[in-house]
Image (tube, rainbow, N blue to C red; front, side, top):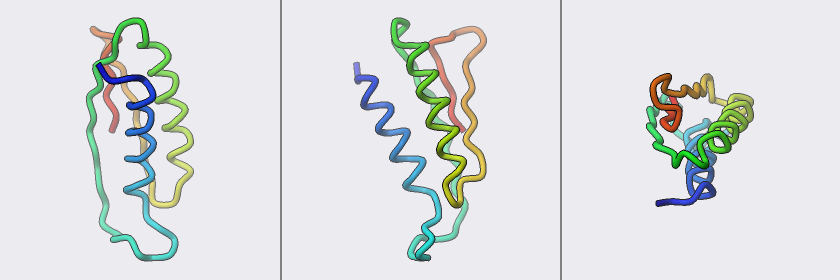
Length: 82
């Protein structure tokens, strides 16, 4: 299984990689990602809280209009990020 740090790195990189660059050297196209993460039960709450923190920070970046974090109501170890 991949570590918590790996998932947080991927989430952080993904959110910053698709945001528009103020220098104008990034394509102005709009991108959407839908990610499903299955978390080990003993890390579920920590990953969920870290993902919420990343989402709050990401929406302050230029070009990021939404960052929704959803938790499966039937399986709290599954997160969806849009």
